[in-house]
Length: 357
Image (tube, rainbow, N blue to C red; front, top):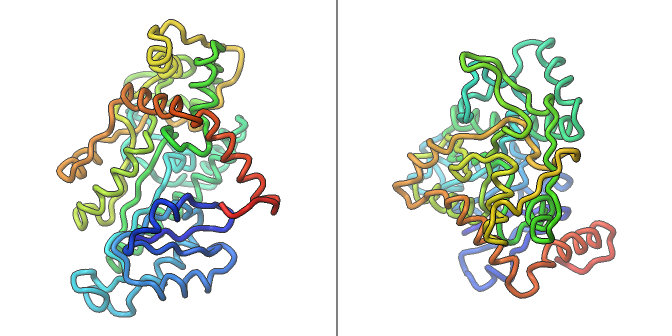
């Protein structure tokens, strides 16, 4: 089966797309409240060829998943042949580059960041110092807690692989844009201002960038700060490539993003070129604090993902093409109001007044 366990508080856009497939089962349960029910449902519908977990926000709930998927035998026995004792062939965890908010950044000045540069603060004093940095910005404390929890999930999965060969791959994403973007951050903070001739908020306070000293000197911040973006369809394609790669990427963490690293102005210029035919139409307002990027870690490297997933058909979409594709979707029919409708329906759902999503 293809399986998508979902939370009652995080509605999933599923049934209409997949209801015709006899290989898909939609499992509805609040894993954070009904933990035993969640494990029972997973066991009832096992085995699975692929599970994509987009709401693994805490190690305890990830532990429930691992426990429920264990076939009850020593690794190498039980489950389907060749599945090493598990009731899933491949479990894909959707992680985030916010994990780097919870860790000291490399001091060698090296960017983009690789997947193996993630390590916990080495002392209580280091933890306290890191928390002070995070507290200096509006999103910092949230990103520290969110990234710390996701990092704990990554660590739980790594332990399960090391001890019992749990067949997982973790995909770390930066800020995401593309068709059907429910959060609409890129749309609201980049695309719509440029479409309507307004300025893009572009001020990035120095402390938000956490500049690092190294052989290359201080890292740039503010207008020169580079960032990574992920294109939604590339993430879906990466999940399928991971499934095709199988054991090659078991136990691995991969960055999934476009290969280009851009500043706020460079992203705005790509949009202005696509919308108006002139990148100079992108106006910047350096008096207003930018809402995106939401992370201050700088760009991430996708070289490992390209190397491992390339033979299985995956390559990131060029950033300019991704921008044009998203804008084309936005201009198609009533998609311009898509994010408004989604946010309204989520608000109605959370207030108990909405119909089933």
